[in-house]
Image (cartoon, rainbow, N blue to C red; front, side, top):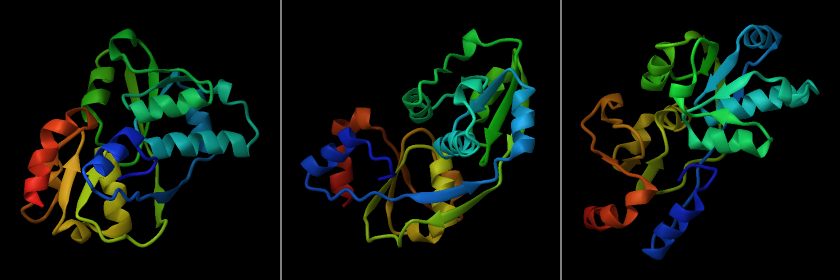
Length: 207
């Protein structure tokens, strides 16, 4: 399971006798004064990736800058929404309430196209790709099933551990089908904590 742990899901797995193990990576993003200037020229920032949200807040803290100076924050990620909220920052998830803004979209793996396309219907989107260096926190432990919250998380994992480490594993994905990103035939199961009871019998049969 990805860190930070979803504890409701964690205990659901424990209740059926599974052993949940978390995995995580460090990502060093190059957020600098040039990017800050680009952000300052926009009315809003769109961030869909928790790692980028963390890097953005860290940059402001390292520079001893007031994070309340950030422009309007927009996200489609509950994780990012909750993360900003921890720092007293409100972000907007309802794209219908956003119009006529210059929005700087910060991304690494550009896989939130539907969200951004919807925003771009009534706003001007300035796409800004961030370069990040990914470091393994530790060696990958033995496991049978792996769970990805989102498509970006899969690509972090792929860069850190390699896609071949998933060859004989059962892959669960919350939001999107990841099959298209494998070079070999692979079955990815659509999954979220909400349908845990419905899907778990099938998972036990697979094992």
